[in-house]
Length: 317
Image (cartoon, rainbow, N blue to C red; front, side, top):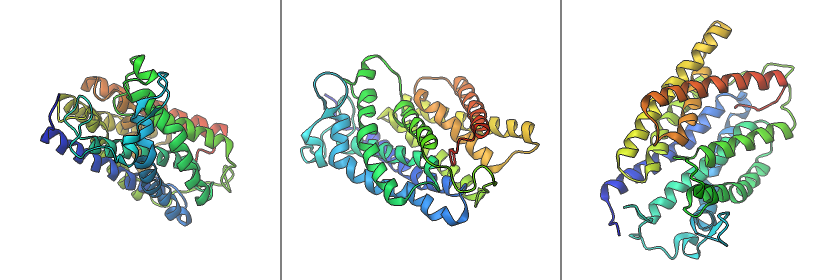
């Protein structure tokens, strides 16, 4: 049985804080793309998830996602000890790690918080705040927690199929991306779209937000090793490489297609590269990270152009 490892605990606490920093980074990233009158409400879409999911996760979400599998089907878990962590001692370790369950729960909770916030990019300027809050609470409980159990719990059905998702490609980005696309297709379009151009309020905010996301992503991917280890080192390195490749690819495509690169294009490319490397961060080489970042950025650019031609109002993404 492993003992608590101070180096692992320090790295995981740092990583948890880094992922938390991504939430205000996302708020700035999205707020810079909307009209000036909607900047504050758009930022609140990200920030309110800290409160809603922060409470929901520690009360019931963690117990459902990482509790003992119910029924042996790999669909959902439950552990009453994880409800408000009342049955967990502060020095009790997550299995096969040197990290306390308290730290594991908080780290995973940051993932649960930022995932519905990612969806808000498709809802910006299109949904009342009260309805958005209700959506976040329901989506976090009924969508995020089961998928987290499927992929990351040892008894989850996708985990048993040897699905590799190092830091949340399926749990975070596929789940949020599919939900955002469904929302874009089902909700009414923003007033003026696509007849009138909707100019971003501040490309500077978007660029600064992307920088915070890039910084926080080191904890997002590196922390998913659950240790201060060679796996964390690899994830840290390839995260940066993929982001750089994604940003460069996007602005080069923009330069060729539109005659000049843009700040929002740079930010979008960097985030695309970060998203692309996330599920593979602990498994691939730096050269592969370069290819993944570039490919993801290129595909995302083409997808954005295709959605615009089809008149799909995916507000910011």
